[in-house]
Image (cartoon, rainbow, N blue to C red; front, top):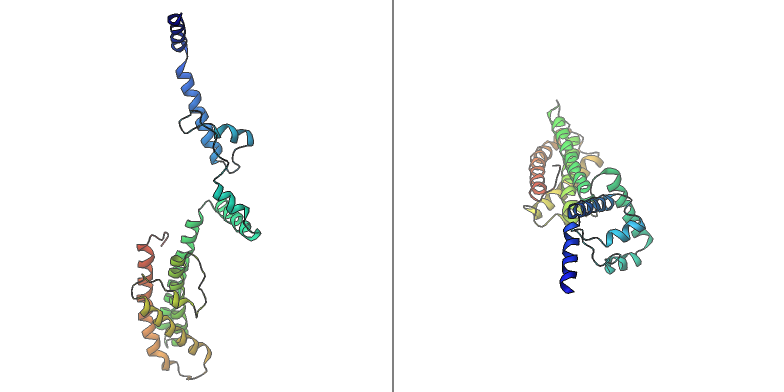
Length: 236
């Protein structure tokens, strides 16, 4: 009797179309991949079915809905938190970019803005007579935005953009960070003087400061660009 049962099982296995089963499993996995990648996600029925299909196509125990730590985080989230999460999803969905990539592009664009201010200042210096006061203001803003780009990169956000706070948050791993903090503070004082003080009236009185800032701002933009590139900031 056992021998007959064994023969029956063997003949059944031999007759089974394993190739067809393999193709079916392949289709299930392809569908599973497409559904999980869809912005809409799986339907309730699909979610139940896909949860029972493992990465190799075999049936496995149904996984939990989501990690409990994540559910706990959502359960305690404030309305503002959820709005921020939704904004992040909206930005990624409508831009086709990740938040990390968008952030790096914003950093690179700010550095480019800084460089454009430096170039504008150079043009002012090349005029006859040179516009020293205007150039000093532009050189300061070139350095300000360059510093703001590296602080944003290092801190993970634009939290210290205030002119008085920014220098103190220069990244510790920025070359000669303490020196550049002082340089930026001094450049701001020079910029305030040319923008707000009526005297001295002679533009030539500001020539030395202007030429000094021309050299300094060029060096600083080179340092900040090298910093961002070395640490993997894209788009720069």
